[in-house]
Length: 150
Image (cartoon, rainbow, N blue to C red):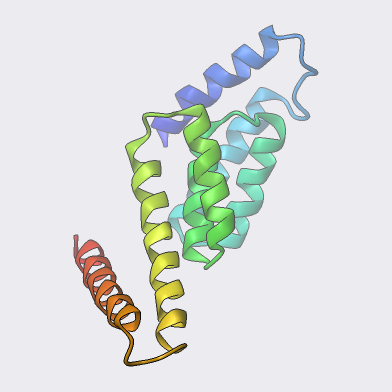
């Protein structure tokens, strides 16, 4: 949790130095909300964590760790497009965040697998393209199984 508070404090301080309007809540309130969001996230209370992270982002919109957590929440709740958008926002703010790159790639792998599963049931089942779809689907399925085990 401490690794999230230092960047949050820096963002709050920088926001106070800019000409932008002040945050909706006081700095202490934002830090409290961030801590509550983190606690809810760790307890897998994802609806509550999502609401709290969104509240933090309402006051500190460039807080990359909250975008990262939202990406994780959206991934875990099956909202893949929202997860991609949250990870992309995180990466705009922190381009070297390897966890965000990795997590976004896992979501894209899952999307690709779902697309290939849909394609597998369509068209000529004996065509060369169908065989390619099946082979790629098999490889992606194995890859996803390997990433779950690590």
